[in-house]
Length: 156
Image (cartoon, rainbow, N blue to C red; front, side, top):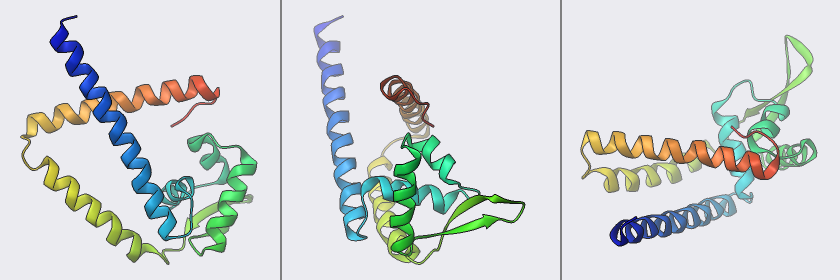
């Protein structure tokens, strides 16, 4: 590997590590605003977009234990973010649904993030955006694989 390529790869990895840290800090700041933890916030996002969400599905998608998911749902329910509903087709199954009570505030925050994102990508052409999308998708797939190796549980 050439020295230039090695330096370029190191710079890219450093920038991505910084981006991951800044992303964590951003999500922590958003979660703090609502009295939640960052994991709570990400699970709330699932509840907002997945109408048939169950505690089991949350555990599966986050890698959290079922007891941790129960505690998380309890926190979200106490905060008025979600409600538990019995599945009308299978009364044993409990669905977790967003109440929408904090939707306007969350939308305002995430709209600001979207505006900033669009400002950054504005200078890229369609081909570059496709390449970046593929790159991030491949990174995400590898991150899921490594997370599964570390935890012994599949992550989605």
